[in-house]
Image 1 (spheres, rainbow, N blue to C red):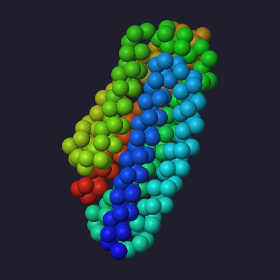
Image 2: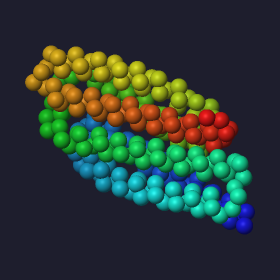
Image 3: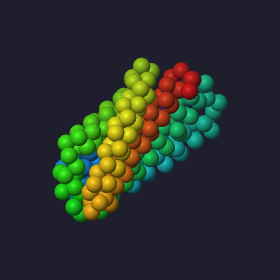
Length: 218
């Protein structure tokens, strides 16, 4: 009975890793779509969000089965509980990638506005995207490697993303004030930056649950 339970735990682990790869691809796609203004990539991201949602449901069902099959060990209970929490954050990351793709599709002259935002705003937005991708990769990697130190690095990096967001927010507000005719489009870029900031928060949550699954500490 225990051997079968451990096989189910391995299946859960593999499913978490698979879903992690799916959201990494979604975020990479949203970044490439934003930087290259690739509308075809946007359609693919929106389409793949359904697959991410379906994966979340499958993992939740597996977690429930594991909790009901037999009295789990304390370490098993932490792992399953963490998995239930993690997939919620992963699903939200997929949603935000889809939200970004939707905005890019709606911004007809967005590429023109992006080119006129200036080097400072573009550089900060690009840096923010890079930090987000690194956080997400490391949070999933921390889960795979059972690496508390790597998970703590993800949590620390959230401060960097928050600071970049606040700098972008100040810059975008300044630009809206002097480029009133482009105010709505610039506000869309601010919303995109906010979505990336929220993705950083969810990556941080994943890292925190990784630490909990290993140490029992939140």
